[in-house]
Length: 285
Image 1 (cartoon, rainbow, N blue to C red):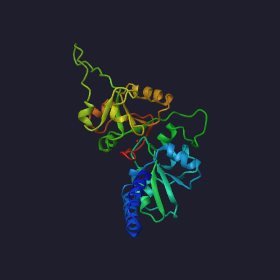
Image 2: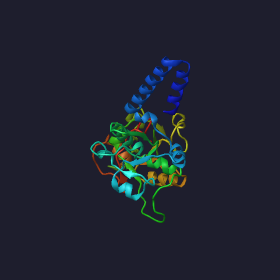
Image 3: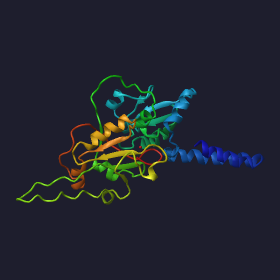
Image 4: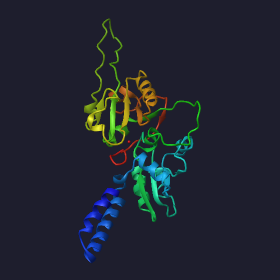
């Protein structure tokens, strides 16, 4: 947004008098209209938010996750307005609002920001990477210190299939699963589902520490860990956390759900299932 306004200002300086003033008003109106229609285009990074808070800028931070996640931990000073209630919620003229979601599931922040921008006196921006991105950037949170049960975020096949592929990397940790012999001979392992066929637009890697070049720039991508139900995804999740990475989720059901192309069946029972969508600026991070 600042870059756009700066460019428009430079252009207006070349126009003198009433013409220049009229031009400035016109381009500013266009910029504000574009912002209201496409709030995700003006997402800000965790570093940007931190510097604005440090500078004492008056901001209202809105956490659009569900109440249970908000109560476990949130950005200090944030208020909780779950995304599903943003449209019906009556809010005062809050001025500049920063909206964030989990950053590991459906991108709820972009839609919530668009809804809030339709309310009088509110100009909403989206925090890149959501709460996971904030934590990964070492931002402060209300999370209590000490031991607590491990909860790993899960993502459904449907959310991966229907969500935008930008800002997402599939991490293939699968190994062929031996089949049960029907006679004396041991059959060869069943072939693994081709991830590139199943998710044609997605980036795929075998290691989250060796990302495709197209995903190395910009905010950290959302890593979706996929295994064969052997615990490899949980082990990798622990390694990622130890390395300070927070933006990841485990595909519920792993290779089993892929082989069924999302049809219902037994899935993982450990972790927290959360809905996903486009990361800000890219798109559910």
